Image 1: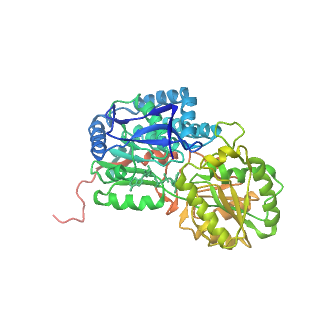
Image 2 (image 1 turned 90 degrees about the vertical axis):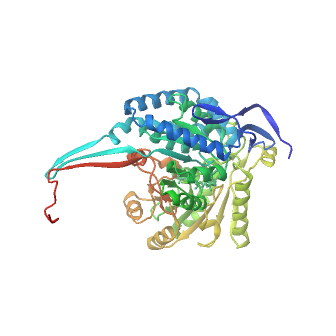
Image 3 (image 1 turned 60 degrees about the vertical axis):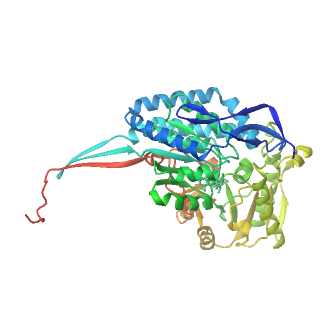
Length: 496
Ligand code: NAD
């Protein structure tokens, strides 16, 4: 395939100790809507440059950790304002490199800024030293920064899943080396550059590349914490890589989130039907917390499927991310498109029915880009690949269930446990929700529509370790440090 740089093509460089650093070679990021068009170039950061970035972060940490929380918050607030001022430019770049429609790209900035604001508002209280006077003396509990954070982000929400790490890490007094995904490196690099402009050199460093650079970040002894969002398989490599130096880790991984529709759910509720369709197909289904398998009580199953198809056909308009009518853009990359196609093909082979959903607004564009028409899969078995694997793309299976115990069992037998949702009367839904193994369960909504950055977010089981967002998402970048001043210095049971 012959490619050509877009007239707007940009080049981003690594950022090491406040300097833009070129590499001997660079890679190109194509536009998934027009794959022959290059949106921009990013450097193939070398292992040696990654080491330099880590060294810079380690040296800067010694002074940065001593700064006041007020100073850090003030710098972060200035960065937020600069991102806000540059929003249209960032969104334009994000849509072109990622393929997400403009409204969705704005949505990503909205989520990113909401969290950054929350972190600024909460940091001082979350990190406040606590002094307790008690019967045995006095205890001082402080939340100390951990050191150099390696932040590794995925391609699906490249900005929000980078700033989710950058903001709390820096506010807590750490320095950072960010590696965005090579499938969406440009807008994340731009945002990191904007934030970095408000902080001393070396506080934020950015490197680019794939697994090679990732391995340096996860093995280097000077990195003391890994904040990773990505696939569960990649996380297994990271855990092994980090084991020699026992690093602190926050891992936000894959999910196979279930949406459960109880008998009390009203299939004629059009708003709710739209919400579940959005929960399945926002960002072309490429969200960790999207509803990836839908279970519907058998008594309402047929009516549900009928209404679901109507709602999906109304909401899903597949087209150019820059067309305001478009709700669903292309898949971000060819590898992911082929993976999703493979899952749908496997379901078909096993006798499932595959129903195409939505309207293709521009067939020529559809044929040239990494587009996939969203599909609904019915008549599949509970243990088909399309049900048990994370699709991370525009397809969803809907299955019937007979009773709560059965559906709770199906939910909980997954290796994943990121988010889930239960739909129906509130009391019944909450009662089922309590029995689900998932980091977040939403009632009568799902996916980002039910996200609340004020509360911890993360997964049970192989969906991850630790939490982002909420106070937990700030403290996760600290080590609790206890200073004990006992009033009884010598213990009575220890012999003289
Ligand atoms: P991925 O695991 O392929 O890549 C994630 C990042 O890890 C990229 O920057 C990649 O270059 C880097 N990487 C790859 N190999 C590495 C290695 N050996 N060492 C260090 N870094 C390495 O994931 P992806 O395809 O970019 O993202 C999709 C996955 O992310 C899905 O499974 C999705 O569910 C998950 N995800 C989870 C959350 C969450 O909050 N739980 C959010 C978004 C995405």
